[in-house]
Image 1: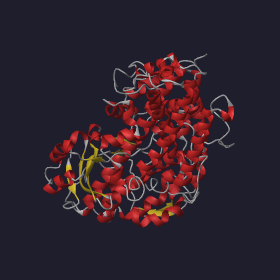
Image 2: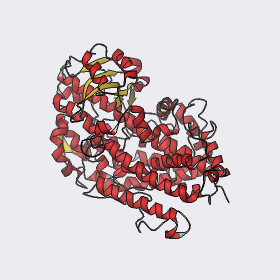
Image 3: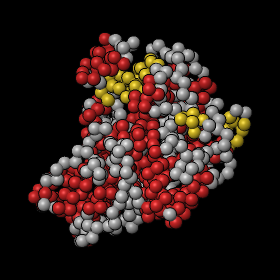
Image 4: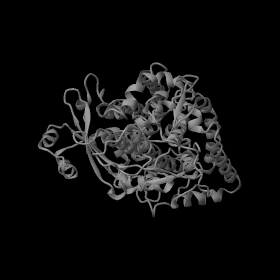
Length: 604
């Protein structure tokens, strides 16, 4: 038996006590940088398909020029090249930078403060101009056109925007793991009544008692100041959105939104009943911004990247390469660790354009979220239970059909659970065989240790059920991440950036009585520079090929994980898993089932 070289992690525990370990993989970073360079080239054709013409502030040009300045941007490539050279010549300097970078507030690890993007960002003139990020290659622009009048109306018509708010989150939040609506139970109604005391009525008490009152609480962003990036403001407002549900249609409708800034500054309460239409449109966009930023950094990165990488690190450090758990996990444990390292080092160039503008702020956000969290709190079924969400409340015809994000994520969970249970039944005949596996015990102990993985809530490893729960959670995180890479996940809904704004560009919070006109509202929303960086982020996911597809190009019965060939029950379970995911993709994206676009690993 052999154990691969030990993977170290950043010494961040004194500052960020709630963070999972942040592993470091120097060799992996070299590989990741080379692969990201290829990804950039693969996305070029889609960017060059931004050929529709727009007139903004009296200037007429094609979308590509507004978003990317008419020429291919090189600073990100230059920074990547610099990092690659340093990794080869002086890896110790990189280790130092990885530790120091999160501890300062600006620039990248090499002293640069450059942020890629168009040199002259402008606010849009018309809501329909958010379609400038729809490429004509492939035909995203053409596919998006039927939705354009409706989505543009969410920035003009208050009634339309109100009706669209929840369906947009529930139907398109797959990549952001948007399990966020919480039922207001009797134990929580008093705190919410206090927050919304100015507009609270007996009707809201009745809605809560009937189980028809919900809240989306993004108040955690009060801890963060607006940031100036490239001379422009990026602001994530703290929001708390109150919604009521129609028990017949199951529709959720926002009725009131609290919006505030750093440490509660500028607090305003907006209601659909009393706010001016333009101000209400602003409040809806503020709520969508906080939801988007939460989805990127917590829903996606914390849940699927950070905890996963820590568990993979301890697995590599404790399990021999011929151990059955290593054989199960190793094929899906590539790339995540070095990508996270590269993200920290090249933050200004590859992070999406949110107000979380430095690694330090991201680690602060993740550390705050991680306080008191258990490993299993991230699982979808646990999350739904903690939010008080039940299937009957979001079902008309098929389970969870009124909350498709839940429906799809639970489908991937079910496939993973079946695979893992089959594997456990074959590999460990009894609970005693689990308890007696000293390498398995060492992995869980290292994962739980504060100076190891720093993962809380892992169970005592003495039953097959306990082992299955840990493995299902881990493999699910890696697997479900792949939904981010399918074309329909991003296009056309997310790439119409006003649907999921990455930031606001002004940090003042307007008075609810202020009748903002569309032009004034657009000044708050992502400008062309922010849109360009958002599109670069999305295109990297959906217009590049996986390093390794989940379903092998040569077929589900090839590239098997376990010795014993196609008749090994564990490989049979793997083939069933692959076939199940292929069926999921066919159903999720029937017009173009990208079965080979789903990656085996967390890559970006």
